[in-house]
Length: 185
Image (cartoon, rainbow, N blue to C red; front, side, top):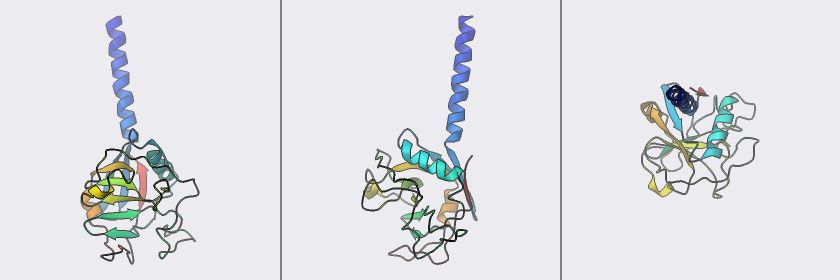
């Protein structure tokens, strides 16, 4: 009987772990293909929660990649001014807005800003992250422990690479690509 109990306990623990892991995989749908992102709630719980909450509400759907710098990163997530379906859409202001929720305090960790890492965009104030995020095209070690990394692309990075690039210095993109949808897998 004791063996059966331990076996059942092990089975349900394994099942619970798999369900939790699945809740931390997001699908970012681009016109080029689907991008699978693994989130790291143990490293940046508040950033992951905000990302999931806004995703579940559909806030990231139709939001443009307003700043994209070749060899560096693609930035998106301005749910106020960057949503092409919103009456507040304004490409010249995209990158200055966020959600109606309070900012998220920094959650710096040992996660290196390597190719495919997702990190919270912010102003000069480390505690100013809100809804915007970026995906690294290449390693950016100068961002390590300066920005809150909270996930990584695990499949479909080739589609991120296809996102329309902006001006070489500013990264400003005219006629930018956008997120079609962003959902939990």
